[in-house]
Every structure is written in structure tokens, then in C-alpha cells.
Image (cartoon, rainbow over all chains, first blue to last red; front, side):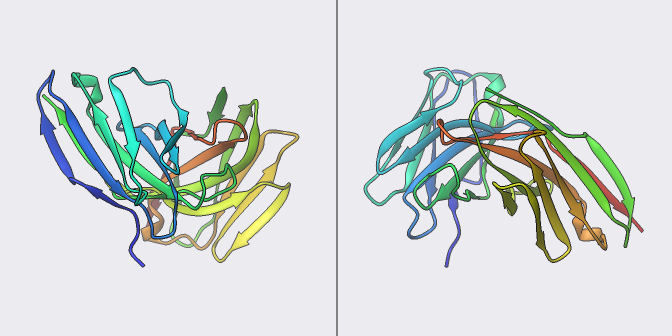
Length: 114
Length: 110
């Protein structure tokens, strides 16, 4: 079975622009979470979605938004990009998003903001 | 909130054993995960502990003490490919999120 897939792999944007990142979960998984990982740090939680509903939100500004589609894939949108948004954005899927579910990570999207 | 601490770096020799400690303070603990992350790659799942005690999976073992807010990951018979960052992550009962430590970079030397 295919794992979690993300697109694009790399992205370069300039300050003020908007970006959309995409994620497809493992087949059968209904929950998707998004994380931001800055170099040298652990991933930081941004959002969790389950059955198209937002279940959790981390400490990120409103410039960050996401949604989940009926096929359980997800998009993360970031508006008005700042230099500090440069990071690896990771998507993780789990069966139903319970706290005891293992989250499986995709390869990530490397975003560079110039 | 959560406060998760783990050492920044560790170095060990091929074939040796290394123990990576993780301490945490959290309001809604519901399990602890260990992930391995090679440079430039995504984290991969290693282990999950929710009850006190030791979980063994081949060369890797993970231990949890809920009363002490403490866990460790034990890597035995180290191989060069084990050089990576090891992330301790606490699962929150209420928020459904994983809170990660900063990671421990393990370097295996010949």
C-alpha cells in the first residue's frame, strides 16, 4: 500500500505570497494532521482534521488554514507568507485520529520564503 | 501544555548501545511515541508506550514511567544507518495532537 503522499516536494515563494500544500493519507485513514518543522527542532502541530471537520488547532496565526475533502485528502494554505514560514511541512495520517493512533508521516514539502 | 526534554546530541560506536532519555510534563498524557528521522526525510514510527514498562522491538526498546514523566529509547547493536535524529512525542488526551521534543541527534562512528 502507498504511504502518505505530499505535493509539491519543494516550493520557493516570496514574502506576501500565498501557498497551498497537498496531502493524501494512507488508504483507509480518515484523519490528517499538519505539522511545521523548522531546522533543528521537532515538528510543531498546526491542525488535525477528521471526517472533514477540524478537530484541533495549534498555536499558529490565522494566516494558516486547512481543509479536508470527502476522499480524506487535505490541503494546507498559508497566506501572506513571511520569511519565518520557511520550514518543512509534514502531513501525517492516522486511522481515526485518536490520541492512541499512530501517526504516519509523509515525505514533507520544503517551503522556502525569500 | 507540554514540556518535553531530550538531549541534543549523542555519539556512540558501531555495535554499542545507546540510551536516549526523554522527560515530559503534560496535562493530558495519553501515550508516548518515538520516531526516527534521517536528515531531510520524514519521521518514521519506532514505538508507542501508554502503560508503564518496557516494549521491545528487535534492536530497539522503549520504556515508560508515567509516575516519573520519563521514557527512554534503547538502541542496541548500533549500525551506521542508525545515525539519525530521534524524536520523543507525547500524545494529548484532549487535543489529539502530538507534541514533540526537539530531537536527539545520534551519530554512530565506526
